[in-house]
Image 1 (cartoon, rainbow, N blue to C red):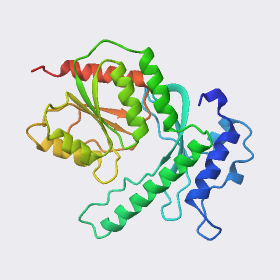
Image 2: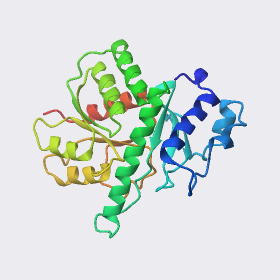
Image 3: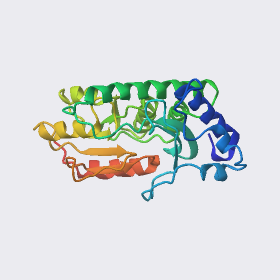
Image 4: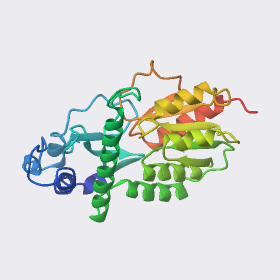
Length: 279
């Protein structure tokens, strides 16, 4: 949705739908923020000022506003209003924020994985309800990306990309944009799919890898990629909205801070592929 069309009433409606699904019933506990807390904001800027304080964004990244609304079982799930890939086009999303460092060897790991699945289910239900009401979601992002791909077409690049994102509509939108730019593109929606694909030939020329994914996350994928002699030198462009310690993860070729404009993505891909020696 264009920024000029995004009103406080639209944002409050999205929050109301979120709360109806994530906090059903009248019992306790209750969310830390409700729709009434946002009713006095008469402008979009005033409303967004009540969202959570934002970390300093990297130069070139787009705007991202988050409001921690949680759910009955997990307090850290967030409502997100952000630009993504297209300047001044805003979309609603749910950030499950479930990338806590719980290891498979930890006693609570099975319960943690079950909680992540619950969060993912709630996210899907909320975003589907938004779409039914005509609110801006990643479905709209995919449609816009597919339209832009027809306008921004370029010649064949002779490079194969493996694009990975557990947000299926974002992944499809990225695929459309990159095919429009002349790349050969394959898509994967979780870490297990990536690892299975990388066991096969031909190998991609570059991996665009989402960091936060359920089950097998980007860090686990990257460790296996670097441990395999076949893919040890594969260029990997890591995309993340999280704050991560780059010193603790295997070497990447670059990092994209979500949400990013498509022009930054195109420029980074071009630079990395130019460095890659051709067979």
